[in-house]
Image 1 (cartoon, rainbow, N blue to C red):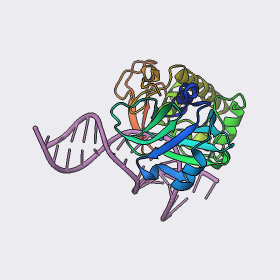
Image 2: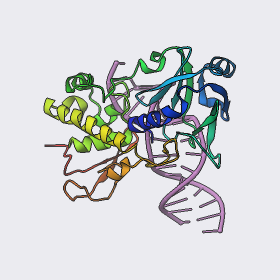
Image 3: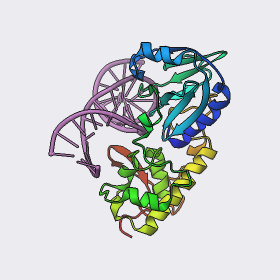
Length: 269
DNA sequence: CCCGGAACCTGAAGGC
DNA sequence: TGCCTTCAGGTTCCGG
């Protein structure tokens, strides 16, 4: 499940292969993958352009083009960008460059592609980047203000903080010792500071591990990430909590599987 | 605006 | 063995 650390890894590892290259063709095998503009205009505006750089915002990956426009990809829950794809299974699009190809593999068909003039067309609604210096505990506190929904549900809202998804939300709340069902607005200042520190620590460590390959995530070279080997609670239902030895529980929050330790993360203090 | 639930997808896993 | 059901989840949409 690509979240911020996975998309950051894809950006880092794809950059040396595509920056400076020219787009020679683009082939789509599933038409709904292209959100904007129409296919004909998309091809006209994209083919022939050079890639000047890659940027990530939240879970979106932006390819900055020579014209100043952006080719944008979102991997959603099962997408990968691969430099090779020998068996060709689940390939929904191929970006062809002078001398190499990038395969957009996406079994679930949730991934999407755009071509936009400004990053803000897609990034404007996103909350702050959690790993930038400007993301302070105070910024987080303001974003949580007035939100009565469970903190886990609020974390999945990309307008609050960009890039956190289901599995890292669980890891962050465990690291901060906060129960996922705590109403966001009920969190005390000290608890928000713990969550803020946990966001930086958990996401930073996951990037260092090149992301987590829980299900359908591959790095561009086909390798897996290793961040999931360090998961304390995410997808660890029934296993022993490394903090206290009791069992990790699974509940559903906003229709998402949510893992936590009832002893380390009590609802009532 | 906020909140929660359904929809979009299809492979994998579990039940019988 | 094989059919059927359920589950997984990022984002968007819709109703309250």
